[in-house]
Structures are given as C-alpha cells and as structure tokens.
Image 1 (cartoon, one colour):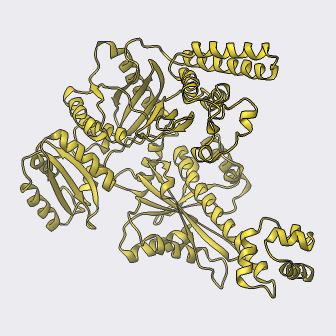
Image 2 (cartoon, one colour):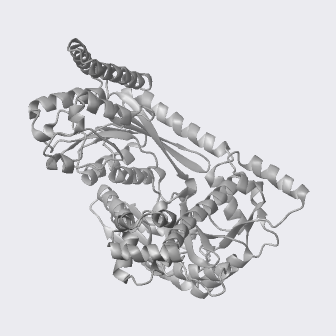
Image 3 (cartoon, helix red, strand yellow):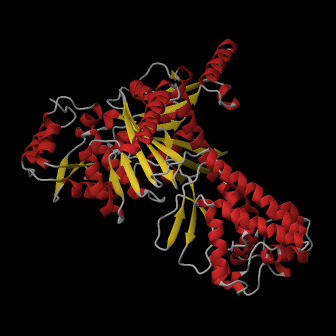
Length: 638
C-alpha cells in the first residue's frame, strides 16, 4: 500500500474522488479529518494533477506523510493557470496550510516615508512600511547607513516639522524647537506651504542621489549664520554637513551604480541536493541597497519547482509591506515568469514589469545566483544548520519527515504561589512570537507540584488546534509522562520530549560534560555549562546527551531558555501584583473602591510611603488626608 497510514476505505474514496475531478485549470484543496485545509495547489489540469498523488512512485517523504493525513479534497475551477495562481495566493493567505512553501521575509531595511496628503509633511523613518495611498516611500536603504540619525539631522537642518500630526494640529504656540532654530513652526503659520515644500525637497534630495545641491544650500546658510554672528547656529550646520557628507559617501561606497535600470529586483535560485536557496537583490535609484535570501527543503516541493517559486514570489510581494520595484527580473523558465507576470498586477493592483533576464541584466542575475549558491554552501557546511538539528531530532524520534513546528513549555512557581506557564513556538528553527502564549495556573494546597501543573497546562493547550510536530517540556521523565497521558486521552499522536540537566555527576564527568558543552557552542552561558543538558525521550533507555550534536543542542537549549524567560516574565508580574494586593487589602477601615484607587496610583515602595508625612502620602496615593491617616497608622502598626 502506498499510504499505509490512511485506511483502505478512505484511500479508495480519495482515489474515486480524484477520478471525478475535471480536466480544467483551477485550485485544489487537501483537508485533514477535521476539515482543516493542509495544502493548496494549482494546476492546468486538475484531474491529472490530483491523480499523480496516488500513482507517482517518486514522491518525497513529506508528500507521503501529507497524503497520509488527507481525508477529503475539493477544487475550484478557474479560467486559466494565471487566475488559478491568484486564487491560490488568496487561499494560502486565508487558510495558512502547513504544507505550502512560505518565502518568509525575515529581513527588513529602513525606509523614508512622506505623507503627501498632509499640508506640511515630515520625514518618517520606518521599517516594513505599509503601502498606502497618498504616501511616498523612499528606500530601502542599506543597513549601516545610520539612516535614523540622518533623518534627525535633515529635519533639524532644514527646519522641518518633527511632531506627530495630532500635536501639530493642536498646537497654538511654537514649540521649543522653533526657538532653537530647528523647526520653522508651520503649525502656527511661521512659514508658507511653498517655502516649506522647498525645504522638504532639499531634504529629499539626499535620498535621490542629488545631495550635492542641498549640501551647497546648507553651506550658504552656514556662511550666512556666521556673518550674522550666529556662531552656534553656524557650528550646528557645519556638523550637520559633515555627517551628511559621510552618509552620501557611504551610499557611493556600498552601492554599485547602474546607469540603465534604477528600480528593480533581481531574483535567482540554486537547487542543491537537499535544499533550494532563492536570492533577491534590491536595486533602488540605480544602486544596490541590499538582498534577501530564502531557503527551504527540496523535499517540501510537491509540484514543478519553478511554478512553486512563482507561487512563493507572488505571496512574498503581496505580503510585503515595503516599496515595490518598477521591474522584477526572474531567472526562471519563460512560462513560469509569464505566469507570475500575469498574476502579480492583479494581486497588487499595480503595473510592474516582470521578465526573464535581458542582455543588460546578466551581471546582476549572476550575482544573485552566486549568492544563492554560496549561502547554501555556508549553511550546509556549518554545524549550526537548523535543518541539521531538525533532521537529528527526526532521527532520534524515528519520524517519517523533518519536523517543522516545535512547541516548548515551562512552568514558573515559587513556594506554590502565583504559578504561571509559557508556550513558545519555533517554526523551522526560528521563534514565531505571534504564537507565544501565557497561562495562569491554579495554586495547589501542597505547594509546588510540577507534574500536576504540567498536566493542567497540557489539558488547556489541547483545547485549541492546530498542534505542532513535537511538544517539548522543560523537565524530566515525570513531566514528559504526564503530558503524554493527556495526549493519549485526547487521541493525539504527537511526540513529547523533555529538556533537562543531568543529576549530580562525578567530578571527572562534570569536567568532560563542560568541555563538550563549550565545544558545542562558543556562546554558551555559565548556567548551561554547570551540568550536562539531556534530551529525555520516552522508551529510550538513556537520555540523549545534547552536547553530542551542536546544532540540536543550540536549538533546544535556546527554546528551553526562551520558554523559561517568557514564563518568569508573567510569574514576576503576577507575584508583584499579589504582594502589593496583600498589604493594601490588609489596611483596616478603607473601602474596596478606595483601595482600587490606591493600587492605580501606586508608584512608590512601602518603605518610601512609610517615610512620607500625611500630606505627601495623600498626594502620592490620590486619597484624602483621613484615608492617609489610616494608611500611616497601618504602617506604624506593622
């Protein structure tokens, strides 16, 4: 049987359903037993594409595992493959299927944003700006250009508005910056709109490769201030010119000038033995400002590679919050590029030229190709490769595929008080903070009971899906077993492992463990070298010593430490609130509402409050003198 994890009846039903699919272009949706969409694909011929899932003998392990979880299929007919690509993009955004490729943009560059709809716009420094109507976006700018400082200098040098729109509209008098000659006070009409726009354009020249003229204007203003004996003002302009010249020099030094194309993205990929790397070079205003790199396992590809890349690039640009290029040059087969060229304007609502490399594009494409190849070589050869860690984890747990989503849990409690727990989520070895969760746990009469609290934590976690590929707990076999029991009761078959330090070791073993740990990670902390870190796996006679695999050690210890930090954050907040409540609640003769007011106004410690006189105490707590007398008496009694 091709898919042993799927029952005979379900498998036959899926095969029968595939026979009824139309021979038309469109999208297909794979669903699990809960009806959740786990994969979205597109095809020129839906029937042929779906049938290939049941008859192909060269499927990747990931495809086989996915098909083992499919319990239903659906399709949507479209006019052509380009329309199907647009629909696929929308369906992926809606359902976020776990088996679709996602070109995640984990690097952001700084931008300058100008709101053209405002009468007196200001220079705004942003990362990942959202494209909005009525806004002009300049960038991206190279990392290390100190753009934030440049924006501040330009704003002061050309006396541009620096306040928020709310402050600007509500101001009746000029602010202190006007008196310091760092703002022209457009808020109260000290400058006309036309003159302000001239100064704004002078500032913007620094982001358009036209800085020389604006530097000349600043030099003129410096000389004028000097003649008028405003030496402090002249010195400020002189320093500003020096720093702005450094910025323009940085631009020229770190950018390659292109006389032809000025705003374009160059994209190429490298297909290795186990992974695919995609490199994107960003060209703005005729200069290279930076690059982005994406990579994913070759085994995750469930369709023609270049069509999967076209789909991934469509998602990348439709999700991007940054400015769009005028041209996108993609080194792929012409049919795949044409598909992207038809779909992209429909999704973005803008006309962007998408093409294969022309004669003048070859140098940039070769640069992107070389970067993709070298990036993969460096990552593959490095022992720190996160995929190496995930592959080792799959080997230890005897999984059929490389895990992607890992969840780690930690419980924080002190003397049975204010117990809290955390859930941190890593996707492909990187933290996904949008999925982090805090839990408030019950206090128990017996005090600290880590296993019972872990059981409560998993009971609550299992109330919501989707579930990860692996659960990780901060603890030993006891915590692992209690989590397993909860999963078994729910009928959920997901591995649970624990990360724990070894018990007291003989001195010789301690020294050996410390040396191995230091070799495993240069950045390892003292707390992780004191004892041996182990991976507790149910059914395994001995825990796996993590220092034996550097990449796995770094990944799991990082997750455990992150869960530890996140749970302590809530625990300390809850404990502080409990302790404060305890002494406020103990004040006799003060009503509940007044105690709430005291809690809201509380910014001092008990020791500081105890040293205050009645008037000071009344002001500090926001209560009447009669109430402050009761508080004072309470402190004296204590």
